[in-house]
Length: 327
Image (cartoon, rainbow, N blue to C red):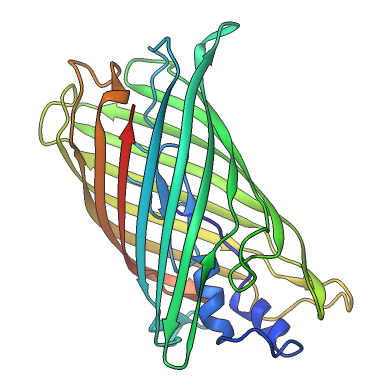
C-alpha cells in the first residue's frame, strides 16, 4: 500500500524561499512526503508521489463469510532512487541524487454488524517511518498517520466491491510532516477470473490548507489516482501459493495556490504513470476456499515499479516489500 502524498516540489520550493530553516534540500523532503500511500488490507507507496503504489493482488479481496472479529498487522518497506525527475515539459532531468526509504506499520481490525450481515468492515491506523538522504542532506522521522476504514460486500462468488475513507492528520515530526489535513476517499473491486486476479482502486486526495510558521498559507492541489494489479495464481485459486503480477499506477494533481497572494504556483501541478512487476506469496494458504479462514494465512509480496511518463514530479524507481500477518 502507498501512503501519503504531500506538497509538490514547487510548493516546498516556494516555502523554502522564505524559510531557510528546513535543514535539508527541499526536493528531498518533497520526494519523501510524496512517496507515501496506504491501503486497507495491504500497504502501498511511491517516491514518485503515486498513492497506493505498494499495492499487491488481493489488496481488496475480502469475504463476508466470517462471524467473529479478527485482526491483521502489516509492515511495508519501500526504497526509491531519486536520481531523476520529470520537468514541466515531461522530460527527464537530474533529481536530488539521493534515496528515499519509507516504512509503513499498519494495524487493522475486521468486524461485522448484525444489521448488515452481507457487509464487512475494517478500522485501521497506519504510521509511516521516513528517511531521505543524499549528497549534503538528510531528514528522518515519524510521518503523519492515516486513520480510517473501509466497507465491502460480495455481490457474486469470488468478487469483492467496496469503499474506503481515511484522514491524514498533520502531527508527524516537523521535518517530514505535510502540515496539511487530508481526506482520502476511494472505491475498489477485486475479482477472480479462473486463475487470474484483478485488483483495482480508484480514488482521490482532498487537501485542506497547508499551515507552516513563517510561510504563506497554501491551498494545495487535489489528487486523483488509479491503481491496477493483475496477477496469475500458479496453483489453483482455491489454494493459492505464488501469484506473479504486473502493476499500473497513475496520479494527477492540480496546481497549488498561495492563499495570501491568490497566485497559482507554477509547476505545482503534476502527473505520473508507473508500471511494475512482482510476486505475492501466501505463506499459509488456509483452508479449501479463498473465502474461508482468510485470517489464517500470512502474505509476503515484492515488486519493482518505474515511471514511464510524468510531469513536475520525481520518478518512481523503487522496490516495494510487504508482509502481512492475520490472526
